[in-house]
Image (cartoon, rainbow, N blue to C red; front, side, top):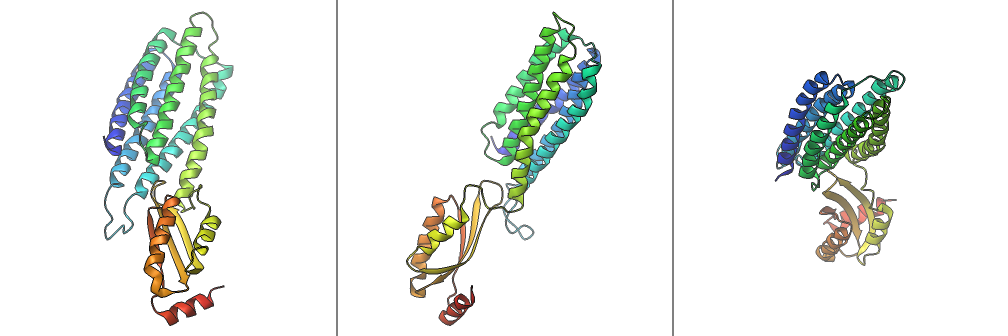
Length: 286
């Protein structure tokens, strides 16, 4: 199943269940369930948007986007991260006052709804769990959030069968919201860094430059740019000064092989073909 199709299935499951949460939240007089319904409806919209952007990201490059559409997948991951963060902050503000004024809820209905919710979210999580795109990875975090949230609801509903500790409901919601924030904030920053063309974290640019300079025919590396469009495919642009331009093709092949060791798939190698221009350019470089 393609990435976009997986996400459309996840969107359908999430959207339909959020509508059911609105109904049962009203029936059970549970503000926690109702708040989760609002949260899940927002998440469903985020998933639908991500699914659309994931589909767009598979298009081939054209006259408008000469580098292709892969970054649209990354845009979906960023937007989903922001929705996770804002949703968690909303839960924090919503539940802090409830610690001091907890509400009585229908814990039997919460237990049954919690079991159904976990089944739905586990199914959705399995659909996107093997995805490689940043979009699918951040959606996996979303479903983890929902599973943890509903486990908390089940635990609370069982405890409330024997006690009147209604404050446990907002307390567990706060713990889960803080946990999701601790995961979503680094993810969001990571996606933004990729979007801003940061060098991939496991690539040591200085080390790579030294490796290029150690090649027999290379005298200078005047330009070295490494970036990724979507967190998966890596690209590089290299400008070299050579001792012997007659051996340029062999040097290109060696550079391509070297880049593969850094998991860089697409490499543009710039070498001046006119000897005088080449020498003048290299001499003027610092």
